[in-house]
Image (cartoon, rainbow, N blue to C red):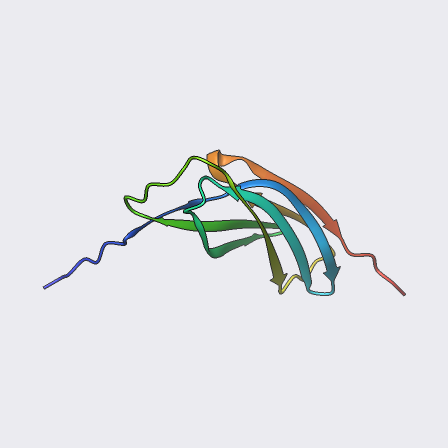
Length: 113
């Protein structure tokens, strides 16, 4: 017998206002992402990271309870993401948001002799 467990939540992406590089060192980059959830009922759930060559795509996924009634007021937030395991000295970082828009930042680590 197979039992399907349905989630009590709806999942979705946030709106992104800005992406700031806080630090970029050997192997990692730390970003501060400012944005908003569609309503105050939405809460951060998890990060999704995709690596493809010199490109990293980040998705901040939020959730809201099914059937939740909340005022249509944007709920601002700040979230820090640390991406580790970077081998190259240059990357395009993309942060995907609701509606398919992508905010990009270019990071380059200076090489010192």
